[in-house]
Image: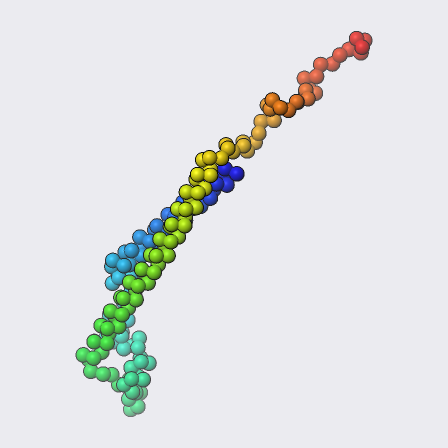
Length: 158
């Protein structure tokens, strides 16, 4: 039974280390959210317009002569792009906060499992050997002599 406790301790320790790694990664996402969001759509106005083609078509209409989208003035597109970029950064930061909380909860659960099973393993009896030595008898059990050790009595003595 003690081996089971040690195995659970090992699994809890492994889960705790993995959760700690994820927590560190997400804390970095909280501190530096600009590094953890998908920045390609916000790189320039052209990329932003391409990513939001349907939104611009529904808001500003479609130019039927060129079958293209009628765009607002350049300053408006830049302002919309910057607002969308800030919203994406906030979303990335909020997601990192949520994932950090989940990692901390998993880390706490793993710590509780480790502590409980470590105490049980340290308090329990020593584990029996995997391959017991069959030649050594315990004091409570009588062992019959082996055939090779039996002394043969001559038939005339009986």
